[in-house]
Length: 187
Ligand code: FES
Image 1 (tube, rainbow, N blue to C red):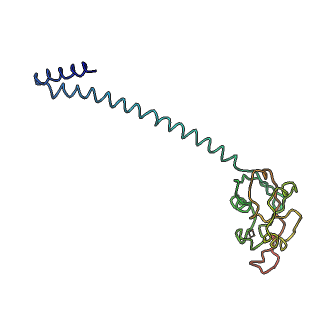
Image 2: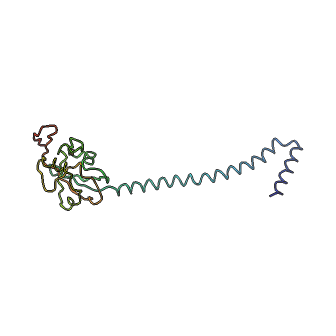
Image 3: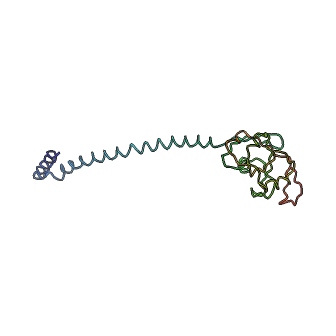
C-alpha cells in the first residue's frame, strides 16, 4: 500500500515538473474517482433492484392475504335471485350489502334505531355462530316484519372466518318506524 502511494506521488511529481499536471493529472484523479464512483454506484444499484422486486412480490402477496381475510356471503333477494359477495373480516353485512348494491335498507346506518336491515340467516348452524344479539337489537327485531327464529339485524352481523359460506335472505318487507311512524313499508 505504502509503495503504491509512493509510486503515485512520484508520478504526480514527474508530471507536475513536466507541466502536464492539468491534463494527465486530472485523468489520473478521474481514473481513481471514476472507479470509486462505479464502486459506489454498483453497491447502490443492487439494493434498489432488490427493493423493486420485493415490492412487486409483496404486493402480490398482500393481495392474496387480503383475499384470505374475506369470506363469501350469499344474499338471497326478495325475488329469489342470489348474489354472492366477498366480505372483509370485520365488516358488517349492512356495509357489505351497500358496497355491492344489494337492496338492504339500513335507514339508521347501524345505530340500532330501525329494523330495515333485517336479514334472515338461512342455516341455523351459521346463526349459532353469531354473537348473541344485544337487548337493543332484540327490541328492534321485535318490530321487524317477518321475524323468524334466525332473524338478525344486518348492521350487527360482523364478518368473521367462521361465517364463510353463510346465506342471508332479505325479508319481503321491512318496517321503517323511525321514518314512517310504524307504517308498514312493503317493497
Ligand atoms: Fe338500523 Fe341496522 S340499520 S338497526
